[in-house]
Every structure is written in C-alpha cells, then in structure tokens.
Length: 381
Image 1 (cartoon, one colour):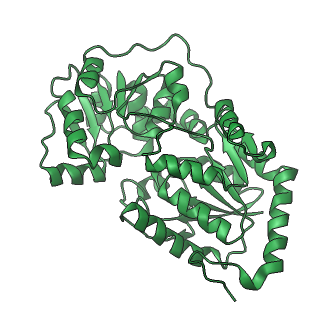
Image 2 (cartoon, rainbow, N blue to C red; image 1 turned 135 degrees about the vertical axis):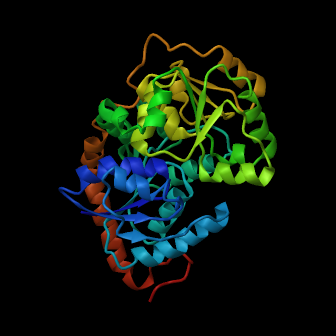
C-alpha cells in the first residue's frame, strides 16, 4: 500500500524515525513536511540526526496564527495529495499539521490513520485538545499508546474495530538511542550532565505567549538550588524579547538541542520541568520525575503513576518542587508498550479490516472520480 505520512513538529519527527523504517520495507511511504516547525534546530536537524529520509514534499508553511496556519496547510496539502494516488493518510498527535492533514484526507476520500489517538486533557480551552477530539472522531483507524486511551475512545462511541493498542513509537526510539546518547554531548553539556542539575523546557503558547504566566514561571527559578539547563525554543526566545523579560541567573540558557542530546540530558537530570507532551513521556521513559508547567495534561497516566506533577504557572508550587524535588516512585509500570510499537502499527495497517477499508474508499473515489471535493470545498472536474 501507499501511505502518506504528515509531519510538522518535533514529536512527529521522532515518531517517523522509527515507523518509516518499519513501514518502507513492505509498503511505500511519501513523507510530507508541512513546515509548521521550520527552524533548522527544530526540524532539519532532527531529520539528519535521526536518519530520516528527506521529505518527498515540503509545504514550507512556516509561522502563522493557528487558524491561518491550518488553512494554509490544508490549501497546499490538498494540491500536493491530489496527484499521488495514495491509499491512506497517517497523522500523529495533536498539532495544527495533524488537524489540517486529517481534514484534507477526508475531503479527498482517503482513509485516515491517527497515531496517538485517545489522549485527553479534558481542557477544551487548549487548542491541542480540540485537535485530538476532531481527528479521533473522523479517523478510520485510531492507534493508541495504551489501554486507557483505547477505553476513552470506546466510551466516546468509536467502533471497536477502528481502535488498536500499539504502544508508543517514541518509546521504541528512546530505547534504541538512550544507551549511547551521552557520547553525543559536547564538553559544556557533558560538564553539566556530570553534576546534579535540573532540565527545563518551555514553549507552549499558553505559557510563553502570556507575559504574566511566563513571568510567573521564570520567577520560580530565581532561587533554584541546582543549576537549571534551559534549551530555549525559538518561540520562547522571541517572547522573552517581545516582553522584555529577564532570564534568572540560575538558568543556563542554550540553543535548542537535538534529540539524542536531549535524551542524554533527560536521562541524567535530577528533575525535569516542562510544558511539552513529548518531554513528559521522555522523562517517564528515563525514570526521572517530571513537573509539568501546565494546568492539565493529556498524559494523565504518568500523573496517575506518580511520576508527573502539575503546577501550572504557580510560582510557589514550582519553587517548592525545586527546593524539595519529588522522589522517584518505587514502580514504573510499562505504560507505553514494550518497544515494538512500530511493528504493531504496521500490523494494524495490514489487518484485514483496514485493508477492506482502503479498498472501499478507493472504490468510492473511482465511482465519484469527477466530483471529489478539494480542501477549498470546490468540486474537481
């Protein structure tokens, strides 16, 4: 079969690194990069470092407001997909690229596969939550990381045959990379990793686009008892300049890091403070306690297991956990599978039920061939 895989942000690049290797043997894959993350440190470096084949199609959308970005991805993607004669479209997670790719797939009468389906923060003020809900309920095959996500989808009325538990391909890659990751660290980062330190990442719009929340989070680190390594996301750097905010001296700022460097540092940190969904999971993979700088999280399983705590932007709560770091729980259940998620995903794509779905869509496209709607709503004739 011919699959179109749509990516646009860091966690999606990480997933492709594993899944493409498993998928491209028995099947054909066309990789489409939307350009949602276009900075070389957030995009191109990941492709090179993780050995991902360059995307066959790069839409180059770049930085826009959420609605404008979704709309522009849809417009360019519809033009790119129309001539490909694909069998299905694969999207991942909850980004603007995910939502745009899902809508275009359905408008072009292509079966839609959603990896990381069923995650919920139950915060409908978060754009990512809306993306998750929308994509889960229009996809043809929902692939979840765990049984809890599967049950959420069943509770929401998705047909049992359309849901499969596969584990997390990010865990697959972490297991492959972690044993030798320390060798990737340049001397200054290796020196930090050799001592007790805290790792901080901060990039979500709810935190960095709000000067009051950003100020409150930074204030908590003024008296941090340990050095705090802070790889600064391009978006965060821009907002710090825009708002004229000073970075506390305890924060050791550096440029965005590659995946392998991040794995090495995550594995050696005393505690990880983050607002990233991907880093929350990587903290769990590494067996390092995590503090999530958000009011809610979709990765509630890590909270339930005692490895993750939510503080929002509460200066006092953050400072308290810096002063008295959370201890690692005695147990770390296998929440994200056994490291074979890529193989399980390929098996789900090859299952008779999904193969039949692909055939049904193709027959429908052929029957309607002259009147398939594009992403702008107009009929193609």
